[in-house]
Amino acid sequence: MKKPLYNSLKKYKKLKRASFHTPGHKCNFFKRTDLFTLDFTELPLTDSLYEANGIIKKSEENLSKLYNTELSLFSLGGNTLCIQSMLRLSSPKGGKILCDRLVHRSAISAMALIGINPTWILREYNQESKTFDKLNLAILEKELSSNEKFNAMYLTSPDYYGVLQDVKSISSKCKKFDVPVLVDNAHGSHLMFTSENLHPLSQGALITADSAHKTLPVLTGGAWLHINSKKISRQEAKSAMALFGSTSPLYSTMASMDIAQDWLYYNGKKEFLNLEKRVSNIKSIAKGKGIFVFEGRLVDPTRITLGVWSIGKTGYEFRDYLYKYKIEPEFCDQNYVVLIPTAFNTKQEWERLKRAILNIDACSLSNNFIEENKFEKLPEVCASLREAMMSEKVVVKLSDAKNRVAGDIVCPCPPGIPIVMPGEKIGDYEIWALKQYGINEIYVLK
Image 1: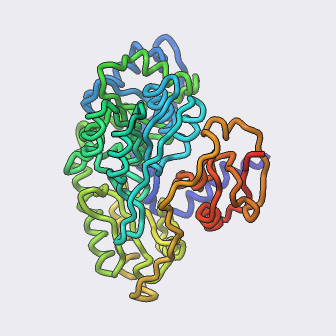
Image 2: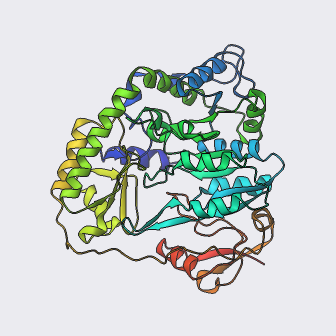
Image 3: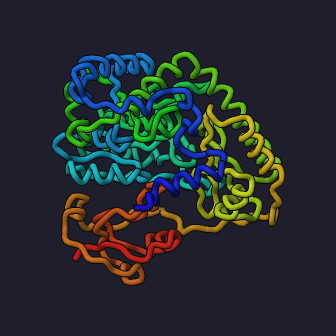
């Protein structure tokens, strides 16, 4: 045996690239801790995750105080478990929910398992950023005013580019119809500590799923389920998590969440204010070089999304350029590069990024945006999510898939946002988008 995974990770570590990607600890924060000597199991002295009444419960209560919630719970199944749990809590017997079309694949799988049927709400196209960013509030109001009974409104905020939804306005509209707002806040665990509290909990969300390891000093797989309702008991919430979660929780990851909470309590606000300043400086430099940047009231002030199309480059070309400066971004596509900095990037790493952007040689000052087929109309639904995912399927070439009914979720990860939804008829947009990611085959219903 040659330990291929272990050896590859050791080899990658030797590249010494600056981490502008998840996890948030950047492999720097835990160097002086003994986490890996604490890999215990559920014992009389160590408590039990889903029946917590000892030290785990105490730590979760501290988390609840920190985020000012009715209830906050640990997830060792990442944000996926939190998403599964909040959908289960909102719709224990299935039913209908309103849902942001930009949704992570884990939510689709959970809806299929629980028997939830989503009514999709599209986002509006932003001519400046050339992306679909803000939820279409006119469509939301129309659906809320219909005769349908919806169990919840499900949002993704922030998205991969750092764009925030106007959760306050959405919550206000939904409250009139007694529709609770659930938010996949995977990339926003830190938003409680930014200069303006941008966390969806402070904007009226009832439940949020926070992937703590993405932007905070937490080991991968650590996430938090936050609940702001007196109607949901601790036992009920734990039961929903136990339905999907592993019975072998990682105590080292739980311990890292405990440490992170302590760090946030004493240092969070100060460190994220400093991070905002660093990010603002990088954005200013990028704009000075002609690069389009995401910024404004409804953008995460700690995320760096660069539209390098504005200097005649593709995201892939810019990523390869960053490699020359030993910088690893989180994500790139044809037009954008996404970087996720945290408080644990070193001064030297920031200088490296600054130098890379200052030295960029624009191919052209003209707009070189690679136009996408705009997703402006929902595909025809031929089967429910559950029916499609549980039915018999066959694999066909992408060239033969037009007008066939998708039998599974198809999405690149990252960002994990489905291009094809189960049960929907495959059209020109879906075929074009899948080709961009080199996907040539797809499951369709028999």
